[in-house]
Length: 122
Image 1: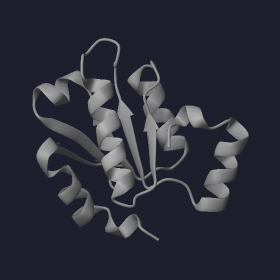
Image 2: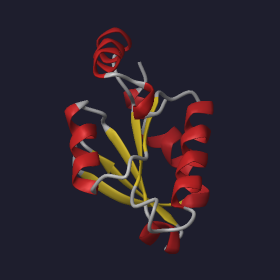
Image 3: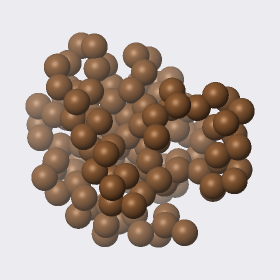
């Protein structure tokens, strides 16, 4: 689901009724780096198809503002897709509860989630 699909009221209702999101995928500076938006959308779709509840954030906002939304909604797993990460062939992962930071090779992303995000599935 995209952040733009929600009004503040419907987002609040979703979080209260469905328990929120397991993973947030944040596309950073999509207007400055070619391919970031497309790759983030592809990742978002793959993760959703794998059965996770995912919030996709691709607004043209400063990273700090995007991260504040994720923290406010208490989404435990954050994946960042940026020009820098794509250049390095990785996604930037952060577990918000433990503050674990990891760079995940793009080709290993779904395996990483299957092994490390099971505790968030309810």
